[in-house]
Image (cartoon, rainbow, N blue to C red; front, side, top):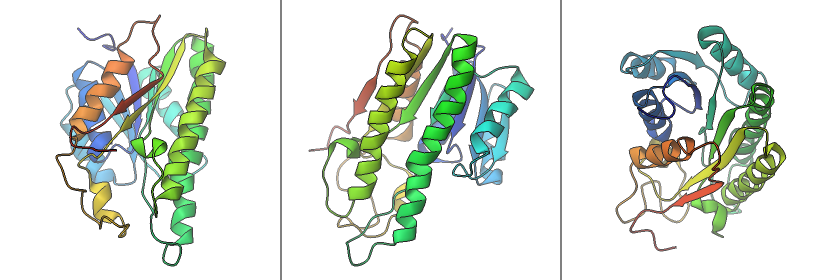
Length: 241
């Protein structure tokens, strides 16, 4: 029996890829699930396939009221929340001459602003109940300097710094905080990435699968109360950076 059996997990960006894999993994480990994304049909299909109870919220994660709605939904449906996985993310990339500045602004709202807001909303609830876990899905891009991907990398670097600060602030409160930073992973995000030197397809090599990242998230969450994995970087075996 998993350590998270009977707990309630909230997962953002849950309609596909890493988010959907996290939902399936946590549900399979015995957690009830609250999941959010914009595509309601995808969420309903995923919910119907899960072994445990679930609730869905189709919403824009960058909307200011979405995190509070997620917490309210968890409390209404299951009486509490125990785990928050901030997974939602997008990529906007391009050269100085071609990059879409509004796309960069939206990426900032989704990849950083929304994570900060959700982390604080749930951290307050977790601190009040004396327990909880926050896992922010980062990227190895946080540790790299790459042309045409500077803003994406900078946001992930900022996410790492913010998460570390939140972990320090919550030390001793019964709330664990950390990041999982995957390398090249086979997800739909590459299907919508403008050419950035590597094109819109996956880079060469054998990428991680979403289930690999989900297993890392579960590993972090299942650690005993005395242990907090602050950062887990997960490279594909063929990643050479």
